[in-house]
Length: 113
Length: 110
Image (cartoon, rainbow over all chains, first blue to last red):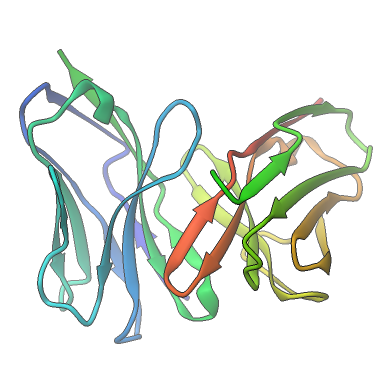
């Protein structure tokens, strides 16, 4: 079964600095999708960024970018110019066949003013 | 999120009582899911549905049952609630590689 691992339960960063959240996954498939979701205290699950495995180019969304290393099965999220509103739980997720999302354990990100 | 609603948003129930959580979508999507969220575990799949009356088990299905008699509704039932089922429950719908989550139900079993 596919698994997703986030090895950093908590991270903190100074406002305006850059932070990288780590994610590794295990799969034998060649085509799949990877996601980062943000969950603020409101509990809502918000899609931050998505990566298709067949695309070598790393996805970016404004201040959010990923470093996708397919051979190493690594999918890290970089947040540039961190803002107070970025404080949240962040989940890495893998989409496998039959449309099922598999989540990592989550990383709680704190932004220090 | 627009197109998917969960009810109730909060519920406290006693051990041994039956509980049903409802997920309703207006998007007419085929796939619907129930996840539970617990500290240190992220979200784990309980059950999912790929059509009316078509359901399958997920990673943590013990103690839960589901039903889908209409495309728009997916029900999660705890036949006899236990304290280990205290959790936050999320419903989701999907299409292709897109997913939308409901706002969650916080269930406390006392």
